[in-house]
Image (cartoon, rainbow, N blue to C red; front, side, top):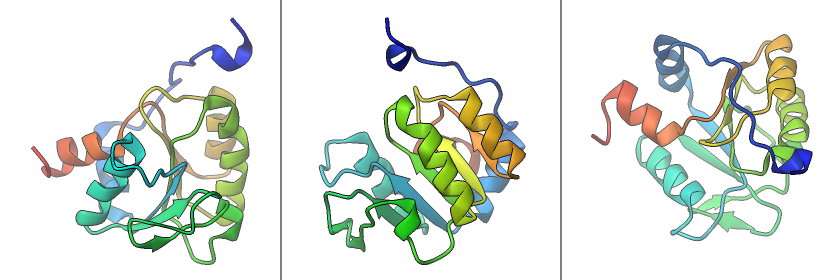
Length: 149
């Protein structure tokens, strides 16, 4: 098994109240790795979040538009503020995404179910960002804010 094949476990996550507060205060969510395929988890999650009032910012260099929103090649190209960077990419891509999230002034990085990266999480926390690992924004929104049950 190579380093890239290993799946890390989250070192820690905010308590439910912290995640609830993060989701309730966020307005703009950049979805890194957002697919335009309605069968993909990233698409379903982003569509759900959009219908629940969040501004979705697709980050996918191969697409010009997803879910009716302009898509950007990277977080570096997003011209406006971002509250949460929601990551749907392989673990080896996470450190660079976290670097870009810090540079963009994001308030939080969120690694989707099955994704965790302790070193990148520590770097994000040291820069003042909230970090959520191996949790789904759609599931947590429904569970903590009472939507989609």
